[in-house]
Length: 251
Image (tube, rainbow, N blue to C red; front, side, top):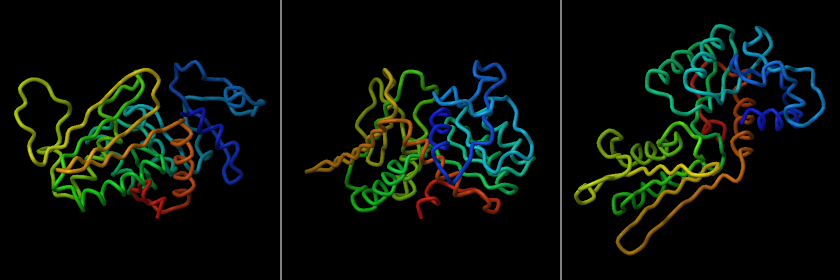
């Protein structure tokens, strides 16, 4: 993701890559980012620390612990941050919310414009036919993904709950096994598949008495997320402190 964000940002005349950051033991530390993306030397080397005064916005696609560390650093330095990292727990999300009182923070489990349009469609379907349908969510990602279910699948479930009055803690389950009994009326089940090098596929099923609607988003490349993250960075640059989402970018 980092390399694709750098490559797309380098082709965007409205922004400039000022710095790239990795963990201290990463093999890219000290290497020129131009060479890493297959282009000419840029003079910008990968480092493990944010250089004060060098950034307007930081885009983070890392791990939950690393993301929170960057949020703290950005808060101290007055740098806006776009967070695409998934797998954050409630405590970590609360830390981001606290930081958003000092800096603009944009948090989204999926930066794809298409996925966020899917969320709007899911809300409309839930509002119109959600009470008459069995709703299932199936997500597929590459075998190296560390968290399950995906942040996007959870956000889809949250959107359905927000629209229909269901509760995540009561009505959402994660896979099925054994003698589960009949499916409960308001139940939403999230199924997580991990296989091969799949970038990301999310399917939402609304299955009613006489007909079924399936909505699928299939990410063909990571550029879908990278370009959305860049749009998000442009959006929060110079904005007041606050907690933003990708839906704010699309308004």
